Length: 327
Image (tube, rainbow, N blue to C red; front, side, top):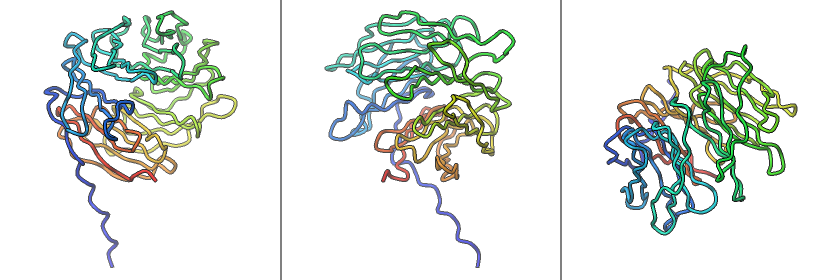
């Protein structure tokens, strides 16, 4: 008897239309839950941030702060009702969204026009840390916020030839430990920086093409990166802060725009240049689903705390998926 065919991948639970522009950034906000529904922010090539109600499945507000230039990154601060948006206009905007407001209350001027998204490290404190692409092409600038005080510039040694930073992830093992930065570079490598010491703790060659995005599971001390090439790389961090490549997963087609591990660390999703969303089991890297809904490159993926997956595409649509419900 022939082996049973795997079930076909599901259809999206629903689709959001109305950005009228390619979607480059997505971010869920659980803090504004209306009757159990998180809010979804999307950033578009036209420079607008749409605020979507997942209850009505419509945009409730549009934020216009980037002068028509592409929005590449969105992040809520853990305290209060403040949203960060990064645009190709070399500006990072801080929005106050409390009590129906939608005003830019501060901004940071960026020095780099590249595609590198910023990263924050913010606990429950009023002060938080921001990593942004720096003035030099290979630099990362670390700022203390909200004062915008420069902490340091992380610049590789001249002979390292890493190229531009392409993706950043600030983190710390616990609230009392030193801040660390994982950075993926143009040469295909990933570096771990000790921010306080301004030094590279470890550096590994993961990819033959530029690293386009990475995500890190601090509980398992394990991360994953995707590139402009055809492979995902899984790597780990030992107690001596040394990175080690654990394995690679070959893809059918090249190009990963974003990778995100679900908050429960059971599965992960990738946004593919080949119009596909791919879902993997995080511990084993077993492929679970290939979601072929979009008609152009998928440029961003995000998970809500309840496991809902959103994907944004160059085809101007945002698809939402309910896959492998959280236990």
